[in-house]
Image 1 (cartoon, rainbow, N blue to C red):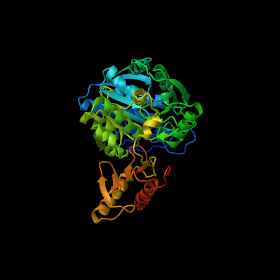
Image 2 (image 1 turned 90 degrees about the horizontal axis):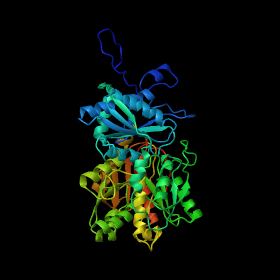
Image 3 (image 1 turned 45 degrees about the vertical axis):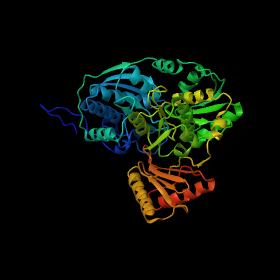
Image 4 (image 1 turned 180 degrees about the vertical axis):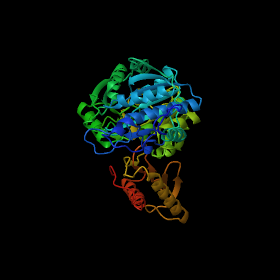
Length: 517
């Protein structure tokens, strides 16, 4: 709602705009918040960077409006009005955070600012500072120029679609409660509490040489010191903070980062390499022979290890993950159970909590450990420590040895053809209907009948020989997500990709892939 206050009228916050031209008076005077920035469980906007021609989707006043919206939603839901906030290492993240903070305070929240932080450090602060709420300013692994917010009202879980929809409605409609009375407290050197939390335990017995890759993201400020304190010989790789990400995005699902980790393992004859994303909640792994291990396969190894210690256990995994979670003979023998669920850190985190699972794994590299291993939220460093503990419990074996004990499957990387945010969910719905029809009429997919369609998140098509392909909409970028796996052969994986892609290509809105198999 616009402010045209006259005598006797109350002054309200200016109406949020979906589009504003940069380098204009309006851009500096009115809130800009593009509606598509409110994703399923995170908020993510193009903020802009030097040399970019893309129009900004958020300005600083827009970040302030989002902060007012978070505070408004918290008050209406009866949540205690205290919140933790922090920011990742990008040239503009601190400014975005302080704009957000001003909005939170205007809505009456007491803000606990922990400064430069990893997302799991902010989640930890909810426990350490006894705050129900969190709003972490980060664009995670997205390219320089993106910003975003990871939010939650109930530790250890973060927003899902219900909360995001409610927040979106409040912000875009300007339905704010400008209660005022908020306050601000900066917690100097809060990181020392987080570091102590992870290192106040016995050191790793094995003398491990570990490559620590951070892609010049925020984890570079914390990860090397933590792993070194646990007794590892640390080989730093791109740990200097540089928000331009000069080598590659800090994304352990990106093959460029994984290749660099593999090369470093070979050069330094390391036992393992860990790669952390831009806000440190994900972990990628390369073994001692330089092999890039997809996170779902690492999850199978951890599930095997943890089930030996804790007995028959339930594990939650996302629909992008390997079929080995349900077919691996070792897991079956250990009495492990699996629940395939929606991709997304918020979904898996909540599912792990609700089902009281021992752990949850996502192929993107988010790992979630309940007590006694973790606090239920995703933390790349807790994941790295769990892998090192697994190696400690297998003193005569390398990570490559453990990996080769698993049944072999042929898996694609996570592929992402371009598809606009405004249409991507409709496209996936059409693809799901097409495969549903094919199953109903007995039409073959890659020469095999469809044995199962899993539709909790997009559509996962499994044929009679166990080969499967997934198509879903990305939750935080204008893309689809495509993953293929076959327990039979590399040829079958390629055949399945061709079959899946032929259905995708019936939708002209879908563009080129970011990478292929």
